[in-house]
Length: 237
Ligand code: ADP
Ligand code: MG
Image (tube, rainbow, N blue to C red; front, side, top):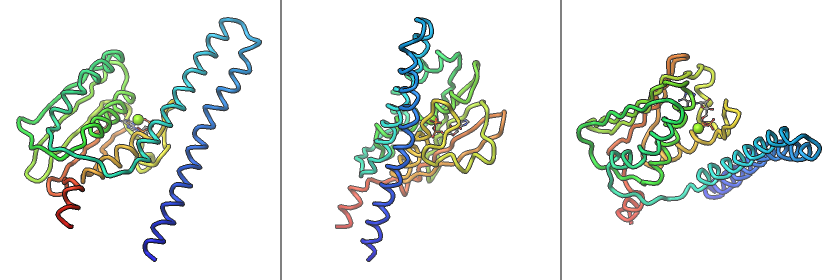
């Protein structure tokens, strides 16, 4: 019976996800259709503008599909013993370039020593990129994003802080809801994806935010809960 309930829950979850992605993809499609139709009879300048809107909306539809697929692939992932710092160092050039374009800066404060963790490198990069991009998107020019690591006895902490808009109280509890976004070109799938990545790594995420001051996302990897499922399954067998 338990299996049957599990199966039904999964099916209804798939159904719910299908319904919401259909809805989310229909929005850009409707906009694209409208502007393509208008394009025929407009001046070249207006056509240029509509062209840009159509391209933006196509990009958005694509981003929704990509994020959604990452989220739906809730599989067992391969983890390796690696250093969070090595992963950070690999993606920093990308983030610095991004910040540069926005006129913002990034401060990196790394712990002197950090223990190795069992991580999936690709997912860790996705996690950090998502949190950092959200931070940058919440700040104006001259904003400063701070990425910090700290090692404690039982856990390793990653903090991503911005001095941007902050998040109003009533929105805080909706952050991790799929498709919740306050951005005209957002997908609302970034944080749900972060949450599922963190859960697969035996971690937790916590948010501190103050309107007009800024936001900090704190990720903790509990060292006793951060293990490889494959290894755990083997030792159980
Ligand atoms: P998206 O970035 O596509 O909107 P996310 O799931 O990444 O989707 O984020 C959901 C919402 O959470 C954002 O639209 C924004 O309102 C809020 N948010 C996330 N990170 C921050 C942040 N650092 N500062 C302010 N608001 C944030
Ligand atoms: Mg985002």
